[in-house]
Length: 569
Ligand code: PEP
Ligand code: MG
Image 1 (tube, rainbow, N blue to C red):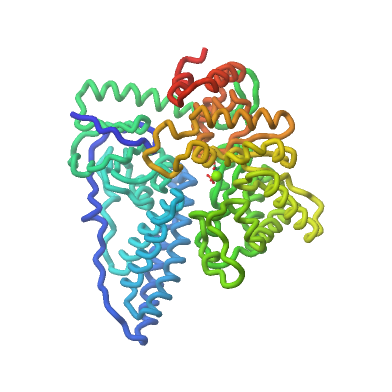
Image 2 (image 1 turned 30 degrees about the horizontal axis):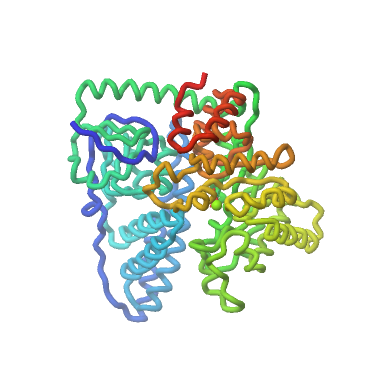
């Protein structure tokens, strides 16, 4: 018996049997590779259309069994995203094969290669992880083109723990249908679709175990602890018994958590906390209702158009924002204007013919202020939708009153142009050190502010938010970040609502600490809301205040974590 320590990406406990999934042999699809004549182009297009249809058919979410559980929202969203990706890729493949006069398999292989290379170079982890989806969809289409059999994943032994170098999102969905117990992989980030799906499907998962596919053999007994990221290989009876106890405890608390999702988010001493969701795609809005959240606290709109060759039009944006607002049925929708620049640089900007090229060195609002036409169109679309729904506008990467007041002027101009009467509430993201030094001026102009702990942490601590090996020294738990949050809360006082929308707001202990610092609104990935709600319902707000005061005087993140770990009563 021995232990392997990895990175936990989906909680839960599983006692099962290893099935080593070697993607070198199981995934590879051989394909013919040849040049074609112009007269053959049409026939190749026809073959592609057939593969497209077959792929689309597979990507339909099956109807749930009569009394079976409904498919989780995230798996529906991934299948829908893949279905769209299949269509987009097919269009690119047609263009490529007509231009280069190569057979459809070769064209598909080139298109996959180009997309994967482009995505791999992106700094942003969320976007980089979409590379997995491109390979997944590409492999599916290639399989149909070549008539290769499906990978043998649908018939697993009972309690199978899949051990793989990497698992693709559609494989995770397929595996979940065949009663998979857990996932153990060498690669795959916390924000990859597979990790998101594993969490949504309730499958424990541990990653970061380099070489695990050669260390573990199929048939070995495995205990997977998705809470601690620990895998025990060939466990002893005593280890199994200990593990069962932890698992029972976890299952009891999980059942309580789901039941508690309908309860109000109020601390023991009656402090009401507003829980909101972060979304990046319209499909995700359904999760706001399913997790009983009070609205959308952050809609990252740049994700809608990052792959787009066309400038997003007023009409397209109105349609999307209206659809999201209507799905919220009266709950507030905070739309953040495009946070572009740096690594987020859509093709429609790169291929811009007229005018000066926008600077990649600016980000967020200042980038938008140099791309006036794009910015004004977006603001007009949001203002238009805000006439009939509770829509608020949030500006990213505000650095002071100068850029923020120019953004506000753009909103007023849009109101004039549309002859509108409602001015939506306007907010600034506080996520740059500069904004901390211009707080009073920003707050004098803002209807609300939202603290982006992801960027605030990296810029305050001189670190890189996308690094996989971040130590606790470089997280939002650092006292410098907590002091920054405290400054915002104090300066805002009773006049200006303060939300925290960075990833850490979805971590139960950190959320408790934020309440102690005086934050009353938290916005997070919807799937993370249940444990946060449960944790907040157990705390006493005034005691958390004392604990937060103590935390503000700590020197290290470790000391702060220890404070939270100590019994609170
Ligand atoms: C943040 O920086 O914390 C934030 C919420 O914005 P994003 O993650 O989109 O940069
Ligand atoms: Mg940010």
